[in-house]
Image (cartoon, rainbow, N blue to C red):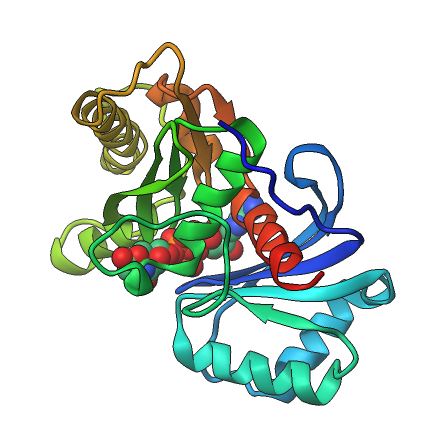
Amino acid sequence: MAPAAPQPAGRLLSVVLGNASTALGVVAPGERGGEVVRHWTLSSDERRTADEWAVLVRGLVGPHLDEVEGVAVAATVPWVLGRWREMLERHLPDLPVVVVGAGVRTGIPVLTDNPREVGADRVANALAALTRWGGPAVVVDVGGTAVTLEVVNAAGQYVGGAIAPGVEVGLEGLGRRAAQLRQVELVRPRSVVARNTVEAVQSGLVHGTAAMVEGLVRRALAEQDLDPATTRVVATGAYAGLVADEAGCFTDVEPHLTLLGLGLVFARNHR
Ligand SMILES: Nc1ncnc2c1ncn2[C@@H]1O[C@H](COP(=O)(O)OP(=O)(O)OP(=O)(O)O)[C@@H](O)[C@H]1O
Ligand SMILES: CC(C)(CO)[C@@H](O)C(=O)NCCC(=O)O
Protein backbone atom coordinates (compact mmCIF):
# COMPACT_ATOMS: atom_id res chain seq x y z
CA MET A 1 0.00 0.00 0.00
CA ALA A 2 1.52 3.34 -1.02
CA PRO A 3 0.59 6.32 1.17
CA ALA A 4 -0.55 9.63 -0.28
CA ALA A 5 2.76 11.18 0.76
CA PRO A 6 3.41 14.83 -0.02
CA GLN A 7 6.18 15.05 -2.60
CA PRO A 8 8.80 17.83 -2.63
CA ALA A 9 7.69 20.76 -4.81
CA GLY A 10 11.18 21.92 -5.82
CA ARG A 11 14.77 20.76 -5.57
CA LEU A 12 16.22 20.11 -2.13
CA LEU A 13 19.62 19.52 -0.60
CA SER A 14 19.46 16.28 1.41
CA VAL A 15 22.25 15.60 3.90
CA VAL A 16 22.97 12.40 5.85
CA LEU A 17 25.53 12.98 8.61
CA GLY A 18 26.73 9.40 9.14
CA ASN A 19 29.24 8.14 11.67
CA ALA A 20 32.03 7.92 9.08
CA SER A 21 30.84 9.82 6.07
CA THR A 22 28.44 12.58 5.13
CA ALA A 23 26.34 12.14 2.01
CA LEU A 24 24.95 15.19 0.24
CA GLY A 25 22.52 15.06 -2.65
CA VAL A 26 20.40 17.38 -4.74
CA VAL A 27 16.99 15.73 -4.91
CA ALA A 28 14.68 16.72 -7.78
CA PRO A 29 10.93 16.24 -7.41
CA GLY A 30 9.37 13.46 -9.43
CA GLU A 31 7.32 10.33 -9.45
CA ARG A 32 7.66 7.99 -6.50
CA GLY A 33 9.73 10.18 -4.21
CA GLY A 34 11.88 12.03 -6.74
CA GLU A 35 15.42 11.38 -7.87
CA VAL A 36 18.95 12.25 -6.77
CA VAL A 37 20.46 14.32 -9.57
CA ARG A 38 23.86 15.10 -7.97
CA HIS A 39 25.62 13.64 -4.98
CA TRP A 40 28.82 14.05 -3.02
CA THR A 41 30.50 12.30 -0.07
CA LEU A 42 32.56 13.97 2.68
CA SER A 43 34.06 12.57 5.84
CA SER A 44 32.06 13.32 9.00
CA ASP A 45 35.15 14.67 10.76
CA GLU A 46 34.00 15.81 14.22
CA ARG A 47 36.75 18.43 14.43
CA ARG A 48 35.35 20.37 11.50
CA THR A 49 33.93 23.79 12.43
CA ALA A 50 30.77 25.37 11.04
CA ASP A 51 32.91 27.64 8.86
CA GLU A 52 34.86 24.70 7.48
CA TRP A 53 31.61 22.90 6.61
CA ALA A 54 30.46 26.08 4.86
CA VAL A 55 33.57 26.15 2.67
CA LEU A 56 33.14 22.49 1.75
CA VAL A 57 29.43 22.79 1.03
CA ARG A 58 29.89 25.93 -1.09
CA GLY A 59 32.84 24.36 -2.91
CA LEU A 60 30.97 21.17 -3.79
CA VAL A 61 27.34 22.13 -4.06
CA GLY A 62 28.24 25.61 -5.34
CA PRO A 63 25.85 26.76 -8.07
CA HIS A 64 23.27 24.11 -7.14
CA LEU A 65 22.64 25.97 -3.88
CA ASP A 66 20.69 28.56 -5.89
CA GLU A 67 18.44 25.80 -7.26
CA VAL A 68 17.43 24.30 -3.91
CA GLU A 69 14.41 25.38 -1.90
CA GLY A 70 15.48 23.89 1.38
CA VAL A 71 17.73 21.52 3.28
CA ALA A 72 16.74 18.19 4.85
CA VAL A 73 19.19 16.72 7.36
CA ALA A 74 19.46 13.38 9.17
CA ALA A 75 22.24 12.92 11.69
CA THR A 76 23.63 9.94 13.57
CA VAL A 77 26.34 12.05 15.27
CA PRO A 78 24.86 14.78 17.54
CA TRP A 79 28.09 16.80 17.68
CA VAL A 80 28.37 17.07 13.90
CA LEU A 81 24.68 17.99 13.72
CA GLY A 82 25.43 20.92 16.05
CA ARG A 83 28.10 22.23 13.69
CA TRP A 84 25.73 21.82 10.74
CA ARG A 85 22.93 23.74 12.46
CA GLU A 86 25.40 26.55 13.14
CA MET A 87 26.66 26.49 9.55
CA LEU A 88 23.15 26.59 8.08
CA GLU A 89 22.08 29.45 10.36
CA ARG A 90 25.11 31.60 9.65
CA HIS A 91 25.99 30.78 6.05
CA LEU A 92 22.70 29.74 4.41
CA PRO A 93 20.14 31.66 6.53
CA ASP A 94 17.54 31.95 3.75
CA LEU A 95 17.08 28.23 3.25
CA PRO A 96 14.37 26.49 5.29
CA VAL A 97 15.81 23.51 7.16
CA VAL A 98 14.16 20.32 8.41
CA VAL A 99 16.22 18.12 10.73
CA VAL A 100 14.68 14.66 10.91
CA GLY A 101 14.30 13.71 14.54
CA ALA A 102 11.92 13.59 17.47
CA GLY A 103 8.88 15.79 16.89
CA VAL A 104 9.24 15.92 13.11
CA ARG A 105 6.39 14.28 11.17
CA THR A 106 7.66 11.61 8.82
CA GLY A 107 4.40 10.10 7.60
CA ILE A 108 5.29 6.55 8.58
CA PRO A 109 4.03 5.11 11.88
CA VAL A 110 6.97 3.68 13.85
CA LEU A 111 5.80 0.66 15.86
CA THR A 112 8.99 0.04 17.87
CA ASP A 113 9.24 0.14 21.69
CA ASN A 114 10.76 3.63 21.58
CA PRO A 115 10.27 5.34 18.21
CA ARG A 116 12.52 8.24 19.29
CA GLU A 117 15.60 6.04 19.47
CA VAL A 118 15.36 4.80 15.89
CA GLY A 119 18.05 6.44 13.75
CA ALA A 120 16.75 9.14 11.41
CA ASP A 121 18.56 7.45 8.52
CA ARG A 122 16.68 4.21 9.20
CA VAL A 123 13.29 5.93 9.26
CA ALA A 124 14.19 7.79 6.05
CA ASN A 125 15.05 4.49 4.36
CA ALA A 126 11.74 2.92 5.40
CA LEU A 127 9.74 5.96 4.28
CA ALA A 128 11.48 6.15 0.90
CA ALA A 129 10.90 2.44 0.22
CA LEU A 130 7.25 2.74 1.18
CA THR A 131 6.74 5.76 -1.07
CA ARG A 132 8.62 4.28 -4.02
CA TRP A 133 7.33 0.73 -3.96
CA GLY A 134 4.59 0.48 -1.33
CA GLY A 135 4.47 -2.02 1.52
CA PRO A 136 5.42 -4.65 2.41
CA ALA A 137 9.08 -3.83 1.90
CA VAL A 138 12.44 -4.68 3.44
CA VAL A 139 15.37 -2.26 3.17
CA VAL A 140 18.98 -3.25 3.79
CA ASP A 141 21.47 -0.37 4.09
CA VAL A 142 24.93 -1.83 3.57
CA GLY A 143 27.15 0.81 5.16
CA GLY A 144 30.68 1.19 6.42
CA THR A 145 29.75 1.56 10.07
CA ALA A 146 26.56 -0.47 10.19
CA VAL A 147 24.41 -2.76 8.11
CA THR A 148 20.80 -2.00 8.97
CA LEU A 149 17.61 -3.80 8.04
CA GLU A 150 14.18 -2.16 8.12
CA VAL A 151 10.80 -3.83 7.70
CA VAL A 152 7.69 -2.01 6.46
CA ASN A 153 4.49 -4.05 6.67
CA ALA A 154 1.59 -4.26 4.22
CA ALA A 155 -0.21 -1.51 6.15
CA GLY A 156 2.69 0.89 5.53
CA GLN A 157 4.00 0.84 9.10
CA TYR A 158 7.64 0.63 10.21
CA VAL A 159 7.77 -2.57 12.23
CA GLY A 160 11.43 -2.68 13.28
CA GLY A 161 14.68 -4.11 12.01
CA ALA A 162 18.24 -5.12 12.77
CA ILE A 163 21.61 -3.41 13.24
CA ALA A 164 24.79 -5.36 12.40
CA PRO A 165 28.45 -4.30 12.11
CA GLY A 166 29.29 -2.55 8.85
CA VAL A 167 31.84 -3.54 6.25
CA GLU A 168 34.53 -1.04 7.38
CA VAL A 169 33.96 -1.84 11.04
CA GLY A 170 34.62 -5.51 10.25
CA LEU A 171 37.77 -4.69 8.30
CA GLU A 172 39.09 -2.33 10.98
CA GLY A 173 38.31 -4.84 13.71
CA LEU A 174 40.30 -7.57 11.98
CA GLY A 175 43.24 -5.21 11.37
CA ARG A 176 43.30 -4.11 15.00
CA ARG A 177 42.80 -7.46 16.71
CA ALA A 178 44.68 -9.91 14.47
CA ALA A 179 48.45 -9.43 14.43
CA GLN A 180 48.91 -10.82 10.91
CA LEU A 181 46.00 -9.08 9.22
CA ARG A 182 45.98 -5.64 7.72
CA GLN A 183 43.74 -3.36 5.73
CA VAL A 184 42.77 -4.58 2.28
CA GLU A 185 40.94 -2.96 -0.59
CA LEU A 186 37.23 -3.65 -0.35
CA VAL A 187 36.68 -5.45 -3.64
CA ARG A 188 35.25 -8.82 -4.65
CA PRO A 189 38.01 -11.45 -4.66
CA ARG A 190 38.44 -13.98 -7.46
CA SER A 191 36.95 -16.83 -5.43
CA VAL A 192 35.13 -17.54 -2.19
CA VAL A 193 37.86 -19.98 -1.19
CA ALA A 194 40.86 -17.68 -1.43
CA ARG A 195 44.48 -18.72 -1.78
CA ASN A 196 46.14 -15.71 -0.18
CA THR A 197 45.58 -13.55 2.90
CA VAL A 198 44.39 -10.41 1.14
CA GLU A 199 41.74 -12.25 -0.87
CA ALA A 200 40.75 -14.34 2.15
CA VAL A 201 39.90 -11.15 4.03
CA GLN A 202 38.11 -9.76 0.97
CA SER A 203 36.13 -12.99 0.69
CA GLY A 204 35.12 -12.89 4.33
CA LEU A 205 34.00 -9.29 4.04
CA VAL A 206 32.24 -9.36 0.66
CA HIS A 207 30.80 -12.88 0.68
CA GLY A 208 30.38 -12.85 4.44
CA THR A 209 28.36 -9.61 4.34
CA ALA A 210 26.31 -10.94 1.41
CA ALA A 211 25.57 -14.14 3.31
CA MET A 212 24.65 -12.22 6.45
CA VAL A 213 22.33 -9.91 4.55
CA GLU A 214 20.70 -12.79 2.67
CA GLY A 215 20.19 -14.71 5.90
CA LEU A 216 18.81 -11.70 7.76
CA VAL A 217 16.33 -10.97 4.97
CA ARG A 218 15.19 -14.59 4.78
CA ARG A 219 14.68 -14.77 8.55
CA ALA A 220 12.89 -11.41 8.67
CA LEU A 221 10.48 -12.40 5.88
CA ALA A 222 9.71 -15.73 7.55
CA GLU A 223 9.26 -14.24 11.01
CA GLN A 224 6.99 -11.43 9.78
CA ASP A 225 4.96 -13.74 7.50
CA LEU A 226 5.92 -11.71 4.44
CA ASP A 227 5.63 -13.41 1.06
CA PRO A 228 9.02 -13.32 -0.70
CA ALA A 229 7.17 -13.25 -4.04
CA THR A 230 5.41 -9.95 -3.30
CA THR A 231 7.71 -8.16 -0.83
CA ARG A 232 10.15 -5.61 -2.27
CA VAL A 233 13.63 -6.18 -0.88
CA VAL A 234 15.78 -3.12 -1.50
CA ALA A 235 19.53 -2.66 -1.11
CA THR A 236 20.97 0.78 -0.38
CA GLY A 237 24.10 2.29 1.15
CA ALA A 238 27.73 2.76 0.19
CA TYR A 239 28.40 -0.97 -0.22
CA ALA A 240 25.07 -2.03 -1.73
CA GLY A 241 26.72 -2.46 -5.13
CA LEU A 242 29.45 -4.66 -3.68
CA VAL A 243 27.13 -7.24 -2.12
CA ALA A 244 23.72 -6.96 -3.81
CA ASP A 245 24.43 -9.36 -6.68
CA GLU A 246 26.13 -11.85 -4.36
CA ALA A 247 23.24 -11.81 -1.89
CA GLY A 248 20.65 -12.62 -4.53
CA CYS A 249 17.72 -11.60 -2.31
CA PHE A 250 17.16 -8.09 -3.66
CA THR A 251 14.43 -6.96 -6.02
CA ASP A 252 15.89 -3.43 -6.29
CA VAL A 253 19.12 -1.53 -5.66
CA GLU A 254 18.81 2.20 -4.94
CA PRO A 255 22.09 3.58 -3.54
CA HIS A 256 20.56 6.91 -2.47
CA LEU A 257 17.38 5.82 -0.74
CA THR A 258 18.19 7.74 2.46
CA LEU A 259 18.62 11.03 0.56
CA LEU A 260 15.23 10.46 -1.11
CA GLY A 261 13.59 9.71 2.24
CA LEU A 262 14.84 13.01 3.66
CA GLY A 263 13.27 14.87 0.75
CA LEU A 264 9.92 13.28 1.60
CA VAL A 265 10.19 14.30 5.26
CA PHE A 266 10.99 17.86 4.19
CA ALA A 267 7.90 17.96 1.97
CA ARG A 268 5.67 16.83 4.82
CA ASN A 269 7.00 19.49 7.17
CA HIS A 270 7.18 22.40 4.72
CA ARG A 271 3.99 22.99 2.82
N1 LIG B 1 27.32 6.75 -2.81
C1 LIG B 1 28.58 6.43 -2.53
N2 LIG B 1 29.39 6.01 -3.51
C2 LIG B 1 30.66 5.67 -3.25
N3 LIG B 1 31.21 5.70 -2.04
C3 LIG B 1 30.47 6.11 -1.03
C4 LIG B 1 29.10 6.50 -1.21
N4 LIG B 1 28.60 6.84 -0.01
C5 LIG B 1 29.61 6.68 0.86
N5 LIG B 1 30.73 6.26 0.25
C6 LIG B 1 32.02 5.95 0.90
O1 LIG B 1 31.88 4.70 1.55
C7 LIG B 1 32.38 4.75 2.87
C8 LIG B 1 31.29 4.41 3.89
O2 LIG B 1 30.19 5.25 3.71
P1 LIG B 1 28.89 5.08 4.58
O3 LIG B 1 27.86 5.95 3.97
O4 LIG B 1 28.60 3.67 4.77
O5 LIG B 1 29.39 5.76 5.91
P2 LIG B 1 28.93 5.55 7.39
O6 LIG B 1 28.96 6.90 8.00
O7 LIG B 1 29.78 4.50 7.98
O8 LIG B 1 27.43 5.11 7.24
P3 LIG B 1 26.58 4.01 7.99
O9 LIG B 1 26.34 4.54 9.36
O10 LIG B 1 25.35 3.96 7.12
O11 LIG B 1 27.34 2.73 7.98
C9 LIG B 1 32.95 6.13 3.05
O12 LIG B 1 34.34 6.05 2.90
C10 LIG B 1 32.34 6.96 1.97
O13 LIG B 1 33.23 7.94 1.49
C1 LIG C 1 22.44 2.28 13.29
C2 LIG C 1 23.01 3.58 12.78
C3 LIG C 1 24.43 3.78 13.33
C4 LIG C 1 23.09 3.47 11.25
O1 LIG C 1 23.58 4.65 10.70
C5 LIG C 1 22.10 4.78 13.15
O2 LIG C 1 20.86 4.65 12.54
C6 LIG C 1 21.91 4.92 14.64
O3 LIG C 1 22.78 5.37 15.33
N1 LIG C 1 20.70 4.53 15.13
C7 LIG C 1 20.30 4.65 16.50
C8 LIG C 1 19.79 3.38 17.06
C9 LIG C 1 18.59 2.80 16.33
O4 LIG C 1 18.38 3.05 15.15
O5 LIG C 1 17.82 2.04 16.96
